Length: 524
Ligand code: MSP
Image (cartoon, rainbow, N blue to C red; front, side, top):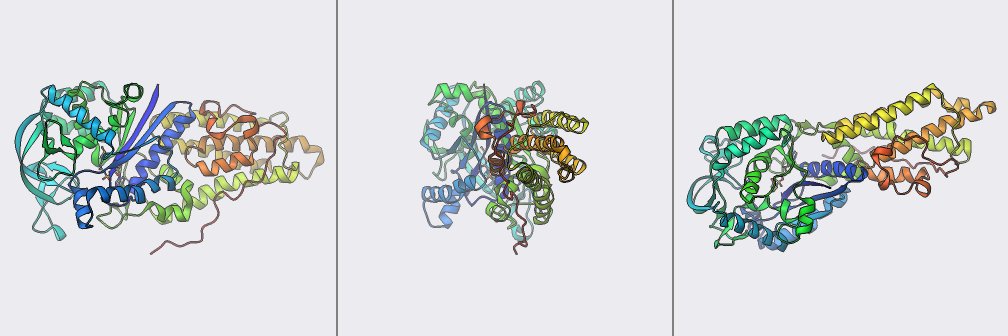
């Protein structure tokens, strides 16, 4: 059984900002966690390269669309994955031959099943969101958009178009979709997104234009190459073409249906309405769930390139490092709701939770083992009530964190893991090993305290590895765990809380400063 998770494929009209980074990092944390459960994980991300939005951007820059997308994918999109420590298993580009072949095979099949008809479209289109916009959602623009129509859905500027197109009879899927949402209550999550989608579908659906004939930057329709596929009905197919649809049946059987499509709520409708209807038309199973997360707000507004409040991932990673970046987005926001981010908040959490909380704990414990036991892990003696309480908290927090990850709530998982950080800090304050060390008669007690603390760090390294792989690798190294326990990535979540895994006698080295203080001020 595999665990197949996807991000949206991103438009390559511009360079990535932290909104794109957010989806990708959250998916990465969730999939790394599942890998540490020992599951057969497949994590997919990629780029959406066709359509008018990308075409116009290339034209503005005076290069061919192919040249433009190749340049952006190589110079901007792929490097950001390395920068954010993303362990994706595949990267699909919609200009990949495997995608073009798979998309054509899919629509040939749907066409042959009689699910496509020819008609003409006259109405409003948003190039910004590559979306046909219903009359009801058309309003008059203001400010920069004065004199233009804009979409009430996202404020993007609209253009009127009249074209001969092919259509997909989406309206006929209304009841089957409602039945799907009813039978599978967790198909769309969270509840806010689910309710929005259900009432949208209940109001009735319009048939969908699936082709464009006034430009050619797209994949030709197999039965009429004078049309290219409407970018969305092609882009959604990346989830199956990457899984081997039409090319590698064995891989496709293993991966499909996907477990979770992680998307921003702006594109939940495409994923929870159009996509399952397309799959139904092709007689294929629909994904298990579509999870719609909220928007990153900067100064109270949705962050986006067009509003010029778009922050590039490197602006934060270069100051705070990739671990803290990943931690911040997972911890400070509720996955599924909108959330405000700020430089001040990142900086404050960095110092309080990472530098003083986790980082300092790791260096203090390893430092004391160095000082009092020459860097050799002592064997614990009998555990007192204080140790028993801590061990019980670790077990409880580990189970609860695992459950939170199942609910796609990394923020709750981290709250649980931080019970361990806080309790261990409290335990050390109470037990005061630096005092105990003054009394030679209490050597065994000192050993018990520090061995307990080292075990606590071992558990933290395992549970935080999906979130902060760099810091945890360094901690694992300092704990001298690899020779007896094996690689950190091979440590299972289910066994994490099993006590007494570090071997007495292991060489403990002082943990380097995992989160050095940051003096830098917010850039202007
Ligand atoms: N190409 C389509 C998706 C096709 S999927 C078959 C697209 N691309 S996009 O480049 O506009 O990326 C949209 C995604 O980026 C959102 O769904 C969301 O995951 C992420 N975000 C973009 N801006 C964001 C915020 N301000 N906040 C949070 N996520 C944001 O739509």
